[in-house]
Length: 182
Image (cartoon, rainbow, N blue to C red; front, side, top):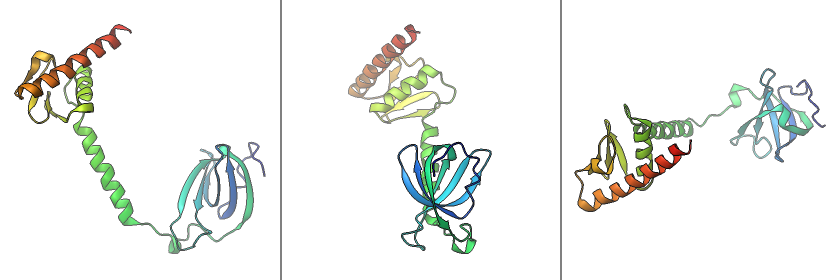
């Protein structure tokens, strides 16, 4: 059956459908729910392989369904006795997301200019960096203070200081070129 802007009446909970999307994907799934205001159909995939195995949930806007075939009707997909959540896997994903968010937050300078953040970001592409209030600390030894010029580089070995100065000068030139073109 081809989709022609239908109202979604065909999307009854429990229906087993074979779907072809406008993206070229093909899959079979059971309808868990249909949200009329957002026009999103929620499918549960993986029913054929093994009823006890893990299943995927797919959310798809109904207007991306190119064709579908009715394969039959099944029992209630939301039967709580048959639902399984891998809590360890979910906990691991949450922990990883929290760790990544903490890492990302540490890379944002507090009380620094956009230019200072751009310089930090440029340094971080090739060198390990972190913020110490408004001072950029490179390789845990070189410190770059405001106004973040080559002359602002202190405390590292001569070779480390020179490397940081070179990256700073290149980034400043890039910022001037970008700013001058606007």
